[in-house]
Image (cartoon, rainbow, N blue to C red; front, side, top):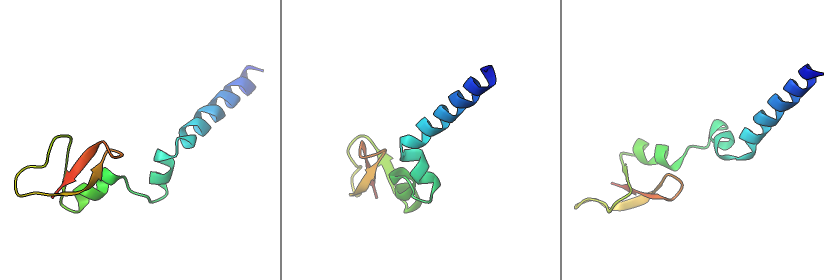
Length: 68
């Protein structure tokens, strides 16, 4: 009986991790906005972009700016 509860608990943990969608979609090939920013030569900043750079997008799910 304990084994069945342990298996059920493990299954619930796995499904709850996939239900969030973030990690699940990233695992399927969708890249995070932070990855795309840094990959294209940008820099993720919570503050304003430095002089001679401009905002090219967002990072951390829209909480920061991607400056290039």
